Length: 124
Image (cartoon, rainbow, N blue to C red):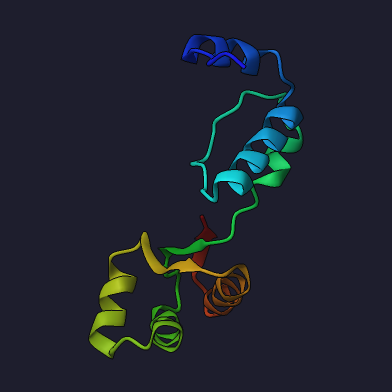
């Protein structure tokens, strides 16, 4: 078999469907025991490619403390194990990340606790 140039390889990849290309990448990774970096592939809007990349880490962002600032400070302390002064600084500097890189369950639990205390919270 003749060695293919990079241009010939790219031309061959252009003829593959997204699923065929994905299968190729998986086979390549298994054969050479490597992990390929994420590949940006243009697919149909809202297609299967969007569903496959589910977010696994979440940031809990305190947008505003609301009227019950003391209750929110207590929840920030409980969630983060920060001292009173540090928790107050987080609440005073909103919008601010309370948790970063948390699991989905931990992020949702923290969001519920903060919202119950009167805060406005978003997950990113």
